[in-house]
Each structure stands twice: as structure tokens, then as C-alpha cells.
Image 1 (cartoon, rainbow over the protein chains, first blue to last red):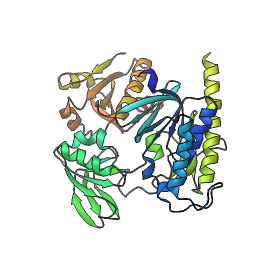
Image 2 (image 1 turned 180 degrees about the horizontal axis):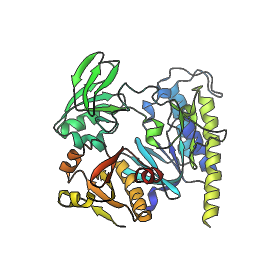
Image 3 (image 1 turned 180 degrees about the vertical axis):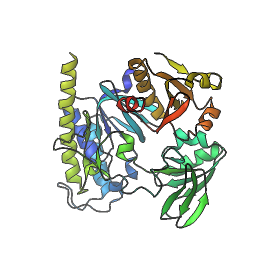
Image 4 (image 1 turned 60 degrees about the horizontal axis):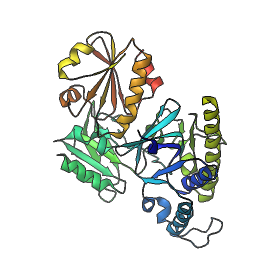
Length: 279
Length: 100
């Protein structure tokens, strides 16, 4: 790992909570980076009209988020576009992977937005025995086999195409093709049920914009789809903080921005103490 | 203890006796690059456990034999038999737990 990939703070997610956290990190002199999906794929970007965020009236989600980015970019925002696949503690820091790349940070702020509320029947039971969240990681293990892709993420079709190129027979489902899914099988996946019809497959790739928090960071305490935090936005894992919609309702910009600010201040305290202990 | 690169040729001999931790990985897999140094750290702390790695790209038969369908996967063998199979990222404390 070279020096360029070492940061003080990794911010997972580039919505209002993530941008707010980055601004506060920047103000405190921390070297912070946001890793995020493209903003155009966020729920906020698609919001037609927002009237409840101070300073903006009759503004669209894309205008508001765009303004936030313009402000941060003027200050030298560091942003990487990509999907985080996992985060692990390594000694005193954390390492995170996105695509086939990795980076290292002294602390992490999770601002990943609304995570999937429900998993499909059979999904968790078959994780690793036919269910996968990562076509890049696991595609080669299904070479020559028939698989289903449930494409809920913006770039899911590209991932499905990549699976075809390495020799998988791909049955592709988007939200238009079917609404309800269940994964069937015993020790291994044998079929995907889509709106009641069974499709015989050996693997099911479920490609969402956001990976569930406790899969992303093993050991993280959650409450249903939400990450548990205290008033300082600290999770149960020292050095890992969370802010915004991923910590609970109401899913509002004002709450996300405030929490992003608090999370960054807590991360600053954590990093300061860690460095003092090292000296 | 050092980490052994496992292939078809040395796999069965390596796992035959005692507790052996095996990390199934591949170069194209980002999360595997997170798991790998943690497995190395475990190996350094626990010389009593043999530790090996299988590159599933080079050893597809071993991946198939142990039904590794998602990586990283860790398998703990006790006296040649699969004792625990852990799919996806596994922190150090959990590796210590499954190798007990």
C-alpha cells in the first residue's frame, strides 16, 4: 500500500451526511476522503422538490446536492467513485476495499444512506453457498454455470455483462421484470423464485447500491436496517462512526448534516487520542 | 509461523493433522486483500495453528472440492476434517474463536 492510500478519515457515502462530515474533517485539518456511488444514483438526487432545508426553497434534490458538492470541491474535496465492499480493522487503522482497490484510514464514518430494509427469503442462509453480493469477487467461481442477477444498483447491468463475458449464463432481473424474489435450495442454491416462477440457477448475485452495514463491517451492531450509535455518533466499534439515514429515521437532510458534523468531531477526538497514545 | 501456499500437491498432507486455517482468496477480489493481512497477523500470533492460503484462480479444483462459492472464505480443518467454514470478512477475534 503506498502513502497515497493512507487517510485520517474514510467517509463511506457522499450524501449530505458524508459531505458535512468531510467539511468538518477539512476544517479540523484531517486528511479525509469520501468513497461514494455516483451522486446521480442517490435517492436525494431524484427528489423533485425540497422545502424543509434552511437556505433552500423550492429546490430539487439534484440542485441541493450539487450545491453541496460545489462548496466542498472549492475546498479541495477528495472523492473516489466506487462501491465499498468491506472494511476491516488492521492494527490501529482500518482498511477498506472498493472494486479491486484498497485504502487505509485511521477512522471511518459510515454515511451510507438507507440500507435495504428487507433481505429476500433464503438470502442470508445461502450467503456463500450460492448467494453473492459481488460479481467481481465471485464471478469466476461460477464460470460456465447458470446464475441469476437481481439488478437493483445503477451499474448492475454492467456487472451482469461482465459475468456473461467470463462464461456465465445470466438470467437478469430488474425491478420491472419481477417484484418479489426468494432464493431456494438446501446446502446450495438451486433456484430463484421471481414473482412465483422458479428459475433453476446455481448462483444468485444480488447487486444493491449499498451493502448491509453488518456485512460491510463485520461485528457492527445494528438495530434492524440501522446502525446503532450513541449521541457522539460512535458505533460499538472504536474508531467507527455513523451518520445520516443509515443510523435511523427521520430520513431528513437536516438530521444527516448535523450528524455528519458530530461524527467528524468525534472522529477527530478519536484520531487525536490514538496519535497521542502512539507518541 | 509462516503461511503456506497450498496447492493440490500439498493440500491433503498439510491439513491431515492438528488445527489448520485455510484462506481461500483471489487477486481480483478486493475484500480478499483485506482478509489476507489479518490472516497473516493471526499466523504470527498463533504458532500452534497451521495456516495456509489457496488461490482459487490457480486451484479451482480445491475451491470446488470444498464448495467455496464466495470469497474470502476461511475453513478451519481439524485432523483433516472441515470443522468450520466462514464466508466473507472475518475479524481477528473471530478467527481466534473459530480456531479454538
